[in-house]
Amino acid sequence: MRKKPPVFLFMLLLLLWVGMIFLFSSQSGTESYGESASVSRWLAGILYPDFSAASSSRQTEILESLEPLLRKGAHYLEYSVLGFLGFLAVRGVMIGRRARSKTRKPFSKMGCGLVAFYPCVLIATCDEVLQTHVGGRTSSVLDVLLDCAGILTGLILCGVMTSHVVFVSKPPENRHRKGGAV
Image (cartoon, rainbow, N blue to C red; front, top):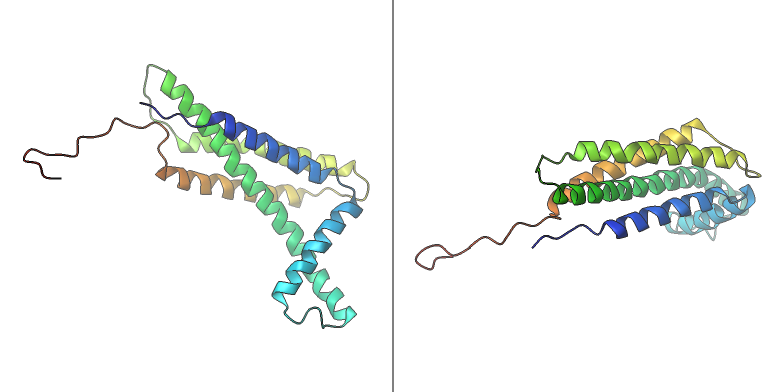
């Protein structure tokens, strides 16, 4: 019996994630700043136990130092997840094709990673172009490069993790040897 990868699920998750990326990108600068400011305040409360007791100027200083790290970290994480989901979707489709074919050629994870990488980079580029058309937002080539680093991280992480998952299972081996030994 063959187990097939849940390709539909992988594709659905990938499309939902891409939708979320573009939803965040279509927010105005004020909306985006408001979301990151609330997360910055929460993070400051964790990293700086005396944050709420600090003076207003000290709180502002802390928040201003955290915000760029938080925003760039969010970009990186967002695109790491995109790379991870992209790899799963491509690998699922390729395994499905391989299972249906008569020839059993070796399956390359590197090929999967490359096939997933380029559409993810295109999404990152479109994301930055979209931001140029949204009020209060700017676009940056450095953001695309950061997104690419996140994509590569997600691809590599998924490639390593899927080394331990077998989508097309082999028939169970006979565990018992002659004489009843296990």
